[in-house]
Length: 459
Image 1 (cartoon, one colour):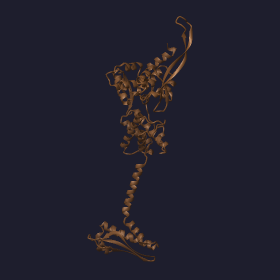
Image 2 (cartoon, rainbow, N blue to C red):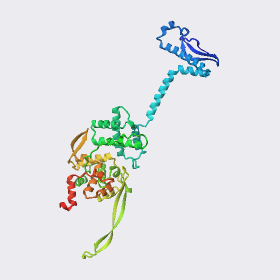
Image 3 (cartoon, rainbow, N blue to C red):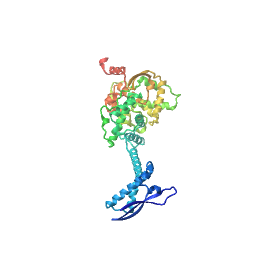
């Protein structure tokens, strides 16, 4: 068999197309195929003359064409010698594979790059899982571990923590995947937050959310990385210097004149007192309506005088009404029943048991202004750990009053009244005395007075 090359017609540019001719008798073949390559006729004819071609040795394009021609010849000759079938389609494929190899390799490389980019874009990394989870939670498509929709304040807390995580990713210049969440990440992330002077509790809360999302993802089969469960991988927190309001403080809040303030201030104060008398979270005491209130009849026997002038008594049946507020807590799903105190009942009746909603932020803003006007200006010592260092500040009490103060105040006043911890837990929804005690903010003097009232030993 012979593999030869011939030229087509010369173009105006002085080059001609190169064609390959494959001829043989055993097996028979006679194919003329364009190669898609071009060469000047004078060079083509003398391409095998070393002396003549020496002046073209630095012409890379020309050398490339000559090398491709020789590669085509060797390939086709080798196939024929091996007894392989050669026809027009096969010769065309051989020639195309050789002459278009660079383009094909380039295209394959581009396709592989695109595939990797698409795979990376579609891959659920830890960072993407968090963002997706939060988005779905906001849309109501993700539930808490108790099967409830996330409350707005919970989503705000989550978003604040995850924003810090993304700030860390930006600082490190990378996107974190599940396998990256290990002790090395933990120490670096903790140092990053501390270096930016975040309070210790903020650092601890953020770390704990990272652990929570790793747990969520693991339960969905997205990773098998156990590093986040290491005992050293923990969010350290300290008891917050939150306050509670004494009965004297509450009297000041109750009696201060706010008639010149907007109507929202009155509603905020009423809501705050609802929070005190129910000891609930703002997400629960901010959405009370008539359906939450039940009135029960309670009968008991009472001894009364037969007449004013007689010591003789008789038994009568007395029927009392007991008003109870039934709440299913948004955060935990716990169901609590709260007996309505006279003041709580009066506030609820004022709004016909359908208390208008007021945004948490507005309640916080208004109740601080009311507390300031009421003269709650005692200097409160606040201890913080900021940037890894202990810091002491003194702040007027009114600045520390917010929606959650109502819950702490309610729990603390119940405790100081002598109520059993387990009874208080039935109202607040806490699952253990230890968790409830974190809410009870009574100072030493308050506790001492409580003990004196309870025990004869000190009287």
